[in-house]
Length: 164
Image: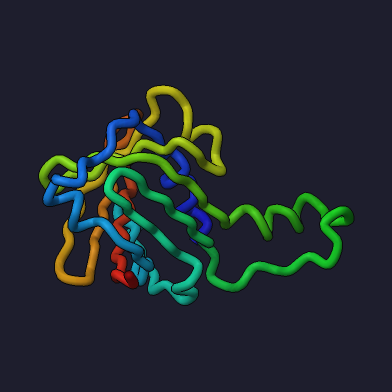
């Protein structure tokens, strides 16, 4: 699932945030775990998440945070980080996606505005990502649409389950 990292790294937007009174934004509030990932485009693929605790997304009234370990297997534990090779470090840190920021909702459109991210590119001025979303009971579906460079050639759709 390493290819997921690249379309997700470019998550950066302006800082407006949803208001607590926004009904659509209020439906997002809570803690969510990703249970399925579908990559669209010319070579579509679907992944069942085998490490559900490796994906956590939290929405509050104005902010969000998401941490993902995009790997098919547990990452290695390095006995001595000071002796780790570049490949060792990539195996441990490469699959990690971490960001937090504000968000805004307009109808069924979710716009994320990262303020902190593992990736400096995600925080670049003018960078953004726009998704469609749907909350159906305890299921949240988020589908990437575009970023500052235009529509995604291989958009990713995440299915999440509410855990809190």
